[in-house]
Image 1: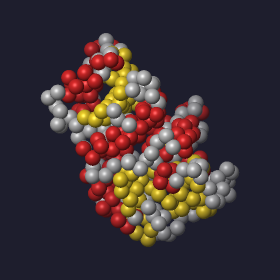
Image 2: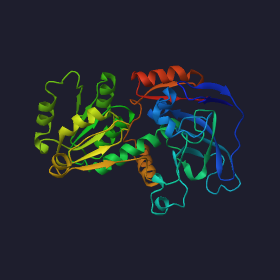
Image 3: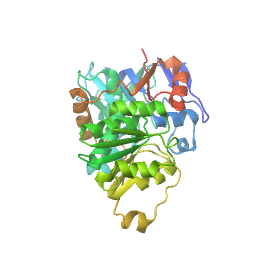
Image 4: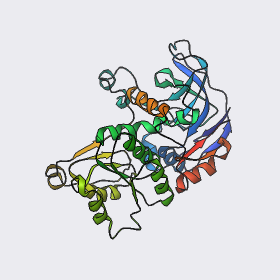
Length: 348
């Protein structure tokens, strides 16, 4: 089969012909019909320092946001059948640690990561453990199915934000930010402000449901005043700020837009420090700081599927480019440049 491989600890991937993998006793073999480029895949492509602590062995196949059709199952597989339409959960739990036994398999103590620590979906076929395989409805397309995984965490963020009737700010209008905006609209937020320096992504944010968009580069001198004016009927600030940019400097600055008693919800990832004063910034302002990592398995998936199947959310504005596996270099260039939003690889 054809696959994209990470072969060395340096920038770049390789496109190669490799043997078709065989599923183990508890695994399924999936013909990949659509797979998406995530921010973590960009990190692996450029091989930043973060990768040294995540990637266990080389070579390996990256990619984890995907959907496809089951073509073979291991002898111990129980529920998943050949012919099923499925998507993959990235967090592969052990099922036996304290976290798993207390309904937190998404934060498993011995967790493997599909497309990070084990071979992933940037290939014509992928082996996925049954416990990380989700059967999806026929009403959901393969492209939509590939985005169920990245849609899950912004859904959790908006749920945590309790946004109904409130003002919310989304910092960073990449795919995670776009879905945060869409779910905020669906869940009844009245004021939704999308903030980004990328004009193309701001225009997508309007399509996804943002009531206001702001480019801080263009409105730097009036930004704080504008936010205060827009949120004047909501306590002079947002009830929740969802940080989806991974830019800690921007996050520190966006903290100012949170009203007293608000929630700061972190989805973006960065190795750079973020500093707040425990007294003035947290205690006296009585804010909640919430970090979210992955989806609740399988509660988040069920909720996301229902919303997607209902037609309440349209992924078309977010999916801006599609490429074959062979054209991965162009795909990654566009994804890294910000020219696109969500970039898909279609193995067929």
